Image 1 (cartoon, rainbow, N blue to C red):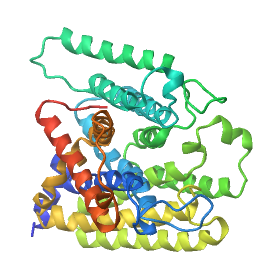
Image 2: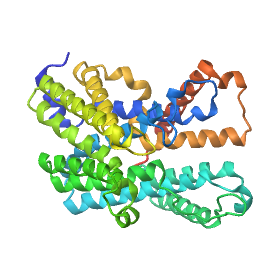
Image 3: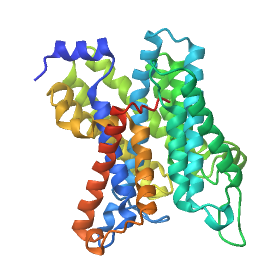
Length: 404
């Protein structure tokens, strides 16, 4: 077991812990897994999403909020590291804005793929997601310094022009109700982008001030409850993106920031036991808040209810604590090396399934029903998730490293 002094040195000198990357990797594997459940039949209902209007929660309903929470967990580390490298406050804000724009662009393009009309667009649907994902990679890839400087410029220009052309020719919807390229909703990446924008900006402004972060988290928790109680004017709800005005999604991300602030306070004083008790207590409080608010607005992901916010935050904190004791204190981070690419190249890993689906559709590959049913089907989907992680690792080896 790692000594307290060693743990303190690891946290303060490198300002990074393995736990966050591992937790992010596990969450990404689960995200790919649950996103592929649509291809199966004869599987337990609790694995999927609970339908809109139903009070309850399934495994799939826990993954997205966990990812949002982890975005918050990493923010203090990321921002402090950039400050150490010499970034000014304005440079930090610029970085936040550029990253937000990138997430919004990717989110909107992927969302439009959901309602794509091949006949109206004049291009087979199987090409849409692979083309936009390759364009994303070319735009946001980190090219080696040894490469001739004009090559990244050319590749990025081609990718940007491709996205513009695709947005222009795009047609979606059903016959009689065809629509052009538009953000009908922001998609998973877009929702993360809006929550990240607010949480990262507030974290930059706070400059490691615990009380500002605590106040921000409480504020968005209140907004979440006020929105469900219809106390927020409709004009506000329509002007400001729902990921912000709804309070719940930003509350999840701010909860992650707050958790890291608590974590750093104790760990930097070599008090891992007190840290564990404090965060366990925080989780207990969140569970109580979930129980209290559930009778009023229910427990539902699709409703983005306060009870969902509190309960999923508690789950993620408990997972964070557990992995920290295994990976950072117990020095067992290598146990998770198999899924490491999903934690260090997360956006790339998120895009890989779209590429794999595209290749499958292009080659007209269809698995027999026995491989898509019950426990065999679940094994297939798990192996599919691991395949995507492996492909991500392979792409990294070939120099593909998306940097937002």
